[in-house]
Amino acid sequence: MSVMYAASRDALATIRSLAEQLIRESEQPVVVGQQVGAELFTIVELVEADRPTRVALADVSVSPEQRNALMTRLIEGKVLPETLRVCQEATALDWSNPADLRDGLVRTARSALLQAAELSNSLPQVEEELFRLSRTIKAHPGLEQALGDRQASADERRALLAQLLYGKVSAISEILASQAVARPQEGLVADDLDILSRQAAHETGRRVADVTTPVALTDAQREGLRAKLHDIYGIEVSIHEVIDRNIIGGVIIKVGNEIINGSLASKLESLRRSLV
Image (cartoon, rainbow, N blue to C red; front, side, top):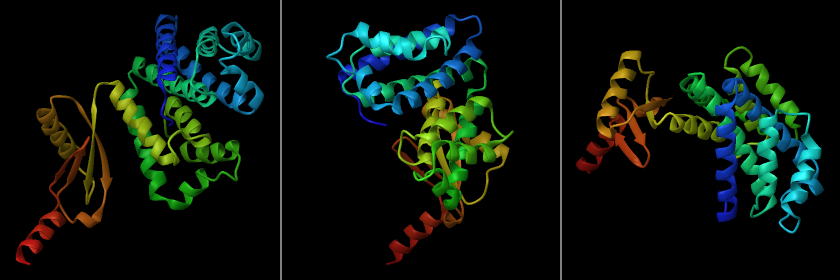
């Protein structure tokens, strides 16, 4: 995801706050949040398909009223009133460049969907589903290549993803994953999904612990590790577990920039170095 300059950061903060407020104050916040997110993704694709429109919507030499009117003509009557309000506000604000308007709408869409998940008490489930999907894709190079194939259309990549996810994840996870496959914000699809998973954890006030282990942890081990990490960091921790048989035994835990290396492979290497 591109780095935004001050004008774009301020504009993003404004439309995200507006979207959150509109969703929260609606009669059906879960439904509205989910639909606003999905509609914003669709609008981004619509605008991206028409370069003159994309440039005009973010052109600071054009008055905010003119940009607002252009967006209104484009989507009025086709989306929820809440979605229209967010898009009107977005086009009335100044962005550093046209790409930032696009990124701002994508980020706002993702936040709206995660807000809907939080309101429906399914945010931990969405976090886990997105993480598992990212690991599945990374574990199958052929699948990763197919989902990232820019020679295939976005619809073709989404159809492949739909076959993979059918009946296995929540609707919110599927919408988020579908957008990531169509146009990932962070390079590779799997990396983008991992970032989304971490964002979901952040929304619930948790940190993420990347735990590498030679075999899958049992439920008891996972809960024990989570409790120990809570004692260390004083905050709830989500465990993202990765299997790597090369570490032989023990675990490697990474929380932010901190690494706790308790693997047997690491201990054997230390012993070897001391003998040398």
